Image (cartoon, rainbow, N blue to C red; front, side, top):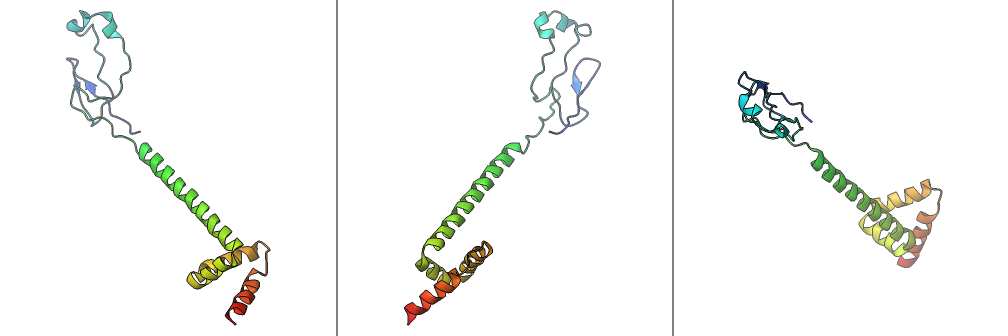
Length: 140
Protein backbone atom coordinates (compact mmCIF):
# COMPACT_ATOMS: atom_id res chain seq x y z
CA UNK A 1 0.00 0.00 0.00
CA UNK A 2 1.27 3.47 -0.78
CA UNK A 3 2.28 5.70 2.07
CA UNK A 4 -0.02 8.66 2.41
CA UNK A 5 0.97 12.22 3.20
CA UNK A 6 -1.02 13.60 6.13
CA UNK A 7 -2.82 16.90 5.94
CA UNK A 8 -1.48 19.66 8.14
CA UNK A 9 -3.85 21.38 10.52
CA UNK A 10 -4.14 25.10 10.11
CA UNK A 11 -4.73 27.42 13.03
CA UNK A 12 -8.52 27.35 12.60
CA UNK A 13 -8.74 23.52 12.71
CA UNK A 14 -9.33 22.85 9.01
CA UNK A 15 -7.03 20.69 6.98
CA UNK A 16 -4.78 21.92 4.18
CA UNK A 17 -3.22 19.25 2.01
CA UNK A 18 0.51 19.00 1.66
CA UNK A 19 0.32 15.96 -0.62
CA UNK A 20 -2.20 14.25 -2.81
CA UNK A 21 -3.52 11.63 -0.34
CA UNK A 22 -5.28 11.90 2.96
CA UNK A 23 -6.09 9.05 5.39
CA UNK A 24 -8.77 10.48 7.71
CA UNK A 25 -10.25 13.79 8.80
CA UNK A 26 -8.37 15.43 11.68
CA UNK A 27 -9.76 15.13 15.21
CA UNK A 28 -10.80 18.55 16.47
CA UNK A 29 -9.40 19.59 19.84
CA UNK A 30 -12.35 20.94 21.94
CA UNK A 31 -10.11 23.36 23.81
CA UNK A 32 -9.32 25.14 20.53
CA UNK A 33 -12.85 25.03 19.08
CA UNK A 34 -15.72 26.24 21.28
CA UNK A 35 -18.37 24.77 18.92
CA UNK A 36 -16.86 21.31 19.34
CA UNK A 37 -16.85 21.68 23.15
CA UNK A 38 -20.65 22.12 23.13
CA UNK A 39 -21.16 18.73 21.42
CA UNK A 40 -21.67 15.54 23.47
CA UNK A 41 -18.53 13.72 24.57
CA UNK A 42 -19.27 10.74 22.29
CA UNK A 43 -18.07 12.89 19.37
CA UNK A 44 -14.73 13.44 21.07
CA UNK A 45 -13.67 9.81 20.87
CA UNK A 46 -10.92 9.29 18.35
CA UNK A 47 -12.22 6.18 16.56
CA UNK A 48 -10.14 5.31 13.51
CA UNK A 49 -12.15 5.85 10.36
CA UNK A 50 -11.63 4.21 6.99
CA UNK A 51 -9.83 6.30 4.38
CA UNK A 52 -12.19 8.69 2.67
CA UNK A 53 -12.13 11.86 0.68
CA UNK A 54 -10.79 14.57 2.93
CA UNK A 55 -12.40 17.90 3.67
CA UNK A 56 -9.65 19.53 1.64
CA UNK A 57 -10.63 17.59 -1.52
CA UNK A 58 -7.77 15.09 -1.35
CA UNK A 59 -8.11 11.86 -3.36
CA UNK A 60 -8.46 8.48 -1.77
CA UNK A 61 -5.44 6.18 -2.02
CA UNK A 62 -5.48 4.06 -5.21
CA UNK A 63 -6.69 0.48 -5.06
CA UNK A 64 -4.05 -2.21 -4.90
CA UNK A 65 -3.39 -4.74 -7.67
CA UNK A 66 -4.06 -7.63 -5.27
CA UNK A 67 -7.54 -8.65 -6.55
CA UNK A 68 -6.31 -8.58 -10.17
CA UNK A 69 -3.20 -10.56 -9.24
CA UNK A 70 -5.30 -13.21 -7.48
CA UNK A 71 -7.62 -13.60 -10.48
CA UNK A 72 -4.67 -13.81 -12.85
CA UNK A 73 -2.93 -16.38 -10.64
CA UNK A 74 -6.07 -18.53 -10.50
CA UNK A 75 -6.52 -18.40 -14.27
CA UNK A 76 -2.89 -19.33 -14.92
CA UNK A 77 -3.15 -22.17 -12.40
CA UNK A 78 -6.32 -23.51 -14.05
CA UNK A 79 -4.65 -23.33 -17.49
CA UNK A 80 -1.66 -25.27 -16.19
CA UNK A 81 -3.86 -27.96 -14.65
CA UNK A 82 -5.84 -28.28 -17.90
CA UNK A 83 -2.56 -28.55 -19.83
CA UNK A 84 -1.23 -31.30 -17.56
CA UNK A 85 -4.50 -33.24 -17.81
CA UNK A 86 -4.48 -32.88 -21.62
CA UNK A 87 -0.86 -34.04 -21.86
CA UNK A 88 -1.64 -37.06 -19.69
CA UNK A 89 -4.67 -37.96 -21.81
CA UNK A 90 -2.59 -37.71 -25.00
CA UNK A 91 0.15 -39.87 -23.48
CA UNK A 92 -2.39 -42.44 -22.27
CA UNK A 93 -4.03 -42.65 -25.70
CA UNK A 94 -0.65 -43.06 -27.43
CA UNK A 95 0.45 -45.60 -24.84
CA UNK A 96 -2.60 -47.83 -25.34
CA UNK A 97 -3.32 -47.58 -29.09
CA UNK A 98 -0.90 -48.45 -31.88
CA UNK A 99 -3.39 -47.10 -34.44
CA UNK A 100 -3.41 -43.75 -32.67
CA UNK A 101 0.40 -43.74 -32.72
CA UNK A 102 0.22 -44.37 -36.50
CA UNK A 103 -2.14 -41.39 -36.86
CA UNK A 104 0.23 -39.26 -34.78
CA UNK A 105 3.12 -40.44 -36.97
CA UNK A 106 1.33 -39.16 -40.08
CA UNK A 107 0.00 -35.89 -38.61
CA UNK A 108 2.42 -34.87 -35.84
CA UNK A 109 5.65 -36.87 -36.07
CA UNK A 110 7.45 -34.58 -33.60
CA UNK A 111 4.88 -35.40 -30.87
CA UNK A 112 5.34 -39.12 -31.48
CA UNK A 113 9.12 -38.64 -31.30
CA UNK A 114 8.71 -37.01 -27.86
CA UNK A 115 6.59 -40.00 -26.79
CA UNK A 116 9.27 -42.47 -27.94
CA UNK A 117 12.08 -40.45 -26.30
CA UNK A 118 10.23 -40.16 -22.98
CA UNK A 119 9.61 -43.91 -22.91
CA UNK A 120 13.25 -44.63 -23.75
CA UNK A 121 14.36 -42.19 -21.04
CA UNK A 122 12.09 -44.04 -18.59
CA UNK A 123 13.72 -47.34 -19.54
CA UNK A 124 10.99 -48.72 -21.80
CA UNK A 125 12.69 -49.72 -25.06
CA UNK A 126 11.39 -51.40 -28.22
CA UNK A 127 8.11 -49.53 -28.79
CA UNK A 128 9.46 -47.64 -31.79
CA UNK A 129 10.81 -50.84 -33.39
CA UNK A 130 7.62 -52.83 -32.81
CA UNK A 131 5.54 -49.99 -34.29
CA UNK A 132 7.78 -49.82 -37.38
CA UNK A 133 7.45 -53.59 -37.89
CA UNK A 134 3.66 -53.52 -37.49
CA UNK A 135 3.22 -50.57 -39.85
CA UNK A 136 5.54 -52.01 -42.52
CA UNK A 137 3.70 -55.38 -42.45
CA UNK A 138 0.34 -53.57 -42.92
CA UNK A 139 1.60 -51.78 -46.05
CA UNK A 140 2.86 -54.99 -47.70
